[in-house]
Image (cartoon, rainbow, N blue to C red; front, side):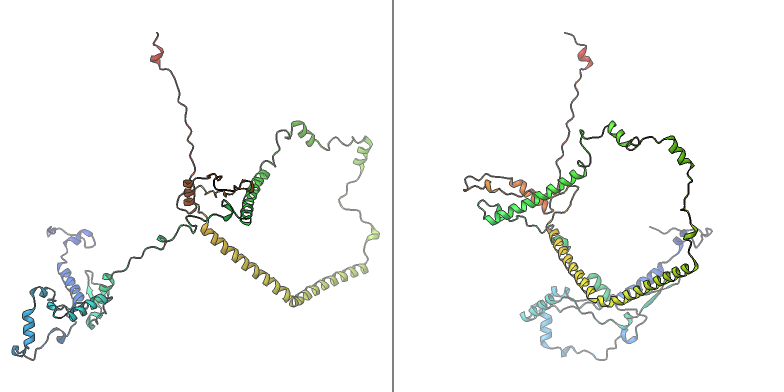
Length: 416
């Protein structure tokens, strides 16, 4: 696409974006591209010396001095191997191993293969002093921009392959509970007496917890509100509200008049004989000061006696340490049990399955009398819920709406 051309009369402000199209920056871009190419390859040519740019050949090669073996090798080389040779004059940033032309010997081929196989990370070559120096390039606005010339290190960082690591939670189990749990030995067909009693004790503890929860709900609701027969009536409410109003008899007129004539006083009367003398006041003041002094002495003595309570303090610290260790053990057990407990994956909780047991009177003597109990599919589904693999759900009971029946108007008009 051709660049837009503007007439000579058209004037554009340099601080507007439209004026950027009319600026010819091709020479600047060519200069910057050439400078970047030099930095990527061997360094800036302007900073190199004559010895680095030119080589003066002082000796003349004599073709007759070449050995016969070299000429034979050149003749035996295949043309296909010449494509593998480096034909560029630019130095390669990474180390290359020589290609054994025509596989002269099995030993050379083995060395080359082993070198390529064991190569992990090529050793970084020493960069030229000129490439390590920072180069400056002027942009359009005349500012100096510094660019690092460490090309080899950047090339290795970008091109090296890193091993993809799988996240840790991929191999982590959702629960430590086994897929198939070993049943209690007391739930077998012919259990031992101790195992059966142990299972009955565990079932008793579970039922006791359920009974306690039901009793707690009863005490919070039913026990606080009486039944209909014991509920208060209007007559009982009036009797309770008017209690103490009509028990005492009405006072007489004389008592009422006597009560009115009695003087009303807030403070008790003061007698002159009970007034303290100056000597009594001095004694009371001295007794008050003595009490304050004794109280201060008691506080000081209490602070001094705290030194002798080191044994008590040590015993309290030891008790606190024991409690801390006990709490740490309980916390560790709780965390361990948490691995086997089901998590809340939805708005419903997983109900613990009921313990499968038989009472002493329900035990049978032989296998023929055993009756099958439970459902294998339900048991496996419950196990998946307990292991946090399936979300627990509740059965949805949809209400069936009754269909309305009515007679159409066209049907009513029909008469037989």
